[in-house]
Structure formats: C-alpha cells, structure tokens
Length: 392
Image (tube, rainbow, N blue to C red):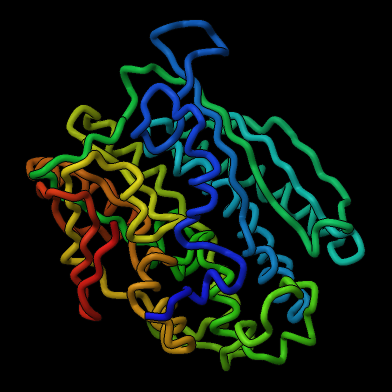
C-alpha cells in the first residue's frame, strides 16, 4: 500500500486522525462510548433526562452537485444535498435511540456569484418536505430556521450544514457495550427503500472527494476551478474517465454517473424506530458507518474486543466503479467508503430475526455480516473477497 492514502493527498482524511488528536482532551459526555455525545439535561434540569446536540454538513458533496447542476441545469440534485446534511445528524442521533422530537437549524454559506437564489430556495423547500415525510413515518422534526450567509471570500461554491437538538430519557439511551458473542447485522446502503423515489447508489456523505476525483474526467479541472482546492497536487485531481452524464446500468436502468454518486444519504430512522419498538435493552450497539467506513466501530469499542466482519454485502456497483477507475487499494476503499452497508447493529443471536425484519419492512436489505470475539488487542478484521484487512 502507498505510504499515504490518495484520500489524504487530496486534503481530506479517512481516519480524521488530526481531528481526534485535537479533541482528545475534551469531555466525552456522560457516556463516552455512546455514538453521540450525551449531555446532562441542561434544557430541563431533570436528572432522569439528557440532551443531545449534533452538527454535521453535506461535506464536499456540494461541489459535485454544483458541477452536475451547471452541466445539466437539474435543480433536483440540491434536494439530495439538503437531505444529506440532515440525515448525517439524524442517523448519528438515532444510534443512541433518539428518534423523535428533534429540533433542526440550518447554516448555509454560499458564494453568491455562483450559487443562485433558486438553489437556496430548493434547499429550504426540501428541508420542509423531508420533515413532512418523516412525520408521515412517525418522527417529528421541528424546524428552527437558521442562517444563510453570502461568504464568497471563504466558500468556493456552497456549504450546507445542520445542527440538531434532542432531549430524551436516560433510561431509553443505547450506549455501546459491544461484547464477545454479539452478532452483527448490517443494513444495506444501496437499493430503494419504500420511502425513496429512485435507486440509491449508497454513497452517503463520506468519501465524496475521492469519488468525484477518482471517477470523473480531467476535463473538469479547467471547466470547474471552483469545485476543488487549487492548492492540491493536480496529479490527484479528476483522474478518472467518466463524464457526469455518462451512464452505467444498474438493475436494468441507465443512471448518469453524476446522479449515482449524488444519491441522497439514506435515513435508517424508520427502520430504527421499528426495531426500538420491540425493545432496546438487548441492543448492545449501533454504528453509523460514516467517516472511517468499515473501521468506524473502532472508536466505540472497549479493550479486548475484536470485531470480525466475514459476510459483508456484495460491493454495490457505485463502489466497484470507483475502485475500477482509481485502482485504490481495497483496504483504503473499506476505510473511506461504507462499501455496501451504512448501519450495523450489535445484538445477541436471539435478536437477529427481528433486527433483519425491521429493515426489510421498508425494503432495505439486511443480513448477518459478522460477530464479536475476545482478543488481546481491540481491532476490526474484515474478511472480504478482495483480501483480509485489519484496522486497529
């Protein structure tokens, strides 16, 4: 493997090692192994309750949306961007059991010379529609407005982020206690859930820097100078062969490459809600496989535990495309991308059936992907058709 991941050379990090180093001294909240930071009930002052506040963005996915919109005039791609930023908050919070009555506030910074008012309008309208859809599925989101700023001096195109707040009973929290004997059930990131309008490529909002530069043609280097960091070595920018409007066939449907990569981040909250209705105490952990991909769980394990994933989903077409175009080593692929499932649930064997059925109720594929065992050193072991990879 190369000494430095191509992902790092592009100015981003799969492991976020510098970020983790910077925040290592910060208070980790009431339950350090919880997937989200859990705070005392500052809002209500009740010791039986707790607060959660979470912030996230759509990341560099907005750069790709900008390019596709300029190429095609298709405003609908911005709807996915709004969903991306929202879901990256909601599904993290759902991993500790917070699946209702969440406050949302947006922060949007744009370059007004490039991003028009109709784009802003589409983002805000989509937020309202997404909240309405979640209400129909049993979850209430409360929209608290936000800030939209014209900051072209510091933002090349647009940055879309949300902050979410929730309050819940401490007794209802799911705090990761991943333990030997657990079975791991993965929920697919690709396909088409009942509440989705089209096939989802499974990307989510992680790895977009690699995806667009590994897959797309060098012609975009000169055509869209606002869509990348000019300080980056041009040798690692737009190294692929595809145009945004080239198509690949998935399940008999020809899908533009740009739209496939821009598939909106799927929310798993409807399935998580259904799972929680059957009881929470037997759920030993839930991991949202975002930054860090299949190695994400490393941050939420105690010492002496090995997570073995030996029956992963077949790699979806989108991730196969990225690897074929880039030649990226598979070990890096599995750490940058979710590679087929973006949520995993750690449970006893007796809970497998209902965990799978909670996903399948919304046409989301689910299967046992591995198990947990004792080990001298905590690590994640992936046994894949492309090789065995260990992360520690």
